[in-house]
Length: 209
Image (cartoon, rainbow, N blue to C red; front, side, top):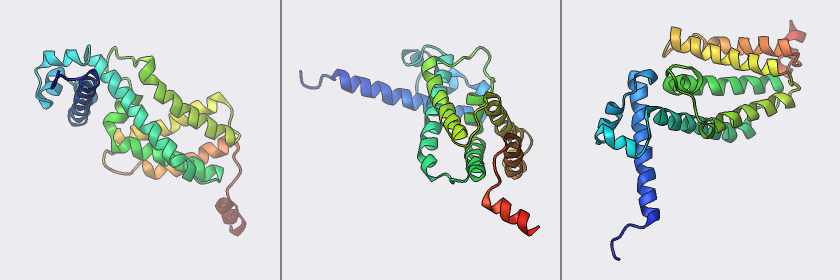
């Protein structure tokens, strides 16, 4: 029958509405804080009544879950896009990796808080939404192994080091650069700890000192 929506058109419309809801949820989280997200606020932003959201997401945690997966998928894409252009020298490569994560996180505190801090009581991401974060960790693990860093504890230390500087920046100097200034120093301390060789710039500085 003419004018009857096909299943593909209905699915496309539903996906578009879900994307609109998630965009509104991110806007609300950025304005009011991740833990303060309410279904009423999200619904108002997309011109819905709160009960109508349940035809797209089963609960508020389901919205958080979709945001979690969406957020990590976006960062995974950024990692894959920049990986070919990373410097070949191990220490310079580590600095570039650290700066990418730091700058990405600080530019979007709600992203960092939802994906890296347990601010929402009772929320646990689903396996599907968690998968992109594991892919990001796998890229980092491959990078570390290529540099000769194979100790699992060294990976944990790296995550804690860079993530800790992001958290300190957001908590103590939001909008500033106080902890970004410490990033290169922290990376060099880490590189010394795991035994990475000095780069050409460092060797030249030592020879001239």
